[in-house]
Length: 87
Image (cartoon, rainbow, N blue to C red; front, side, top):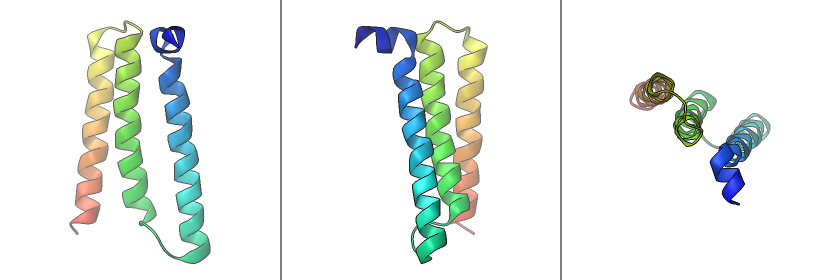
């Protein structure tokens, strides 16, 4: 387990699970017409994925601008979600 965290691979696993979640939820929305709207869902999941990638960058010792870039991406995805939801 320690190697999964030290190498950042744990984040890769989590981001892959987030991608599967997105596919499943969008698929359910298309099939049954129920569930969150795809744009709001995807921007929400993108925000979480960007935060996870910031954690991965920090765990692997990346320079601070890389961590900051992922955090900024998370902020923009979150703001996009808020705009969609409050329209």
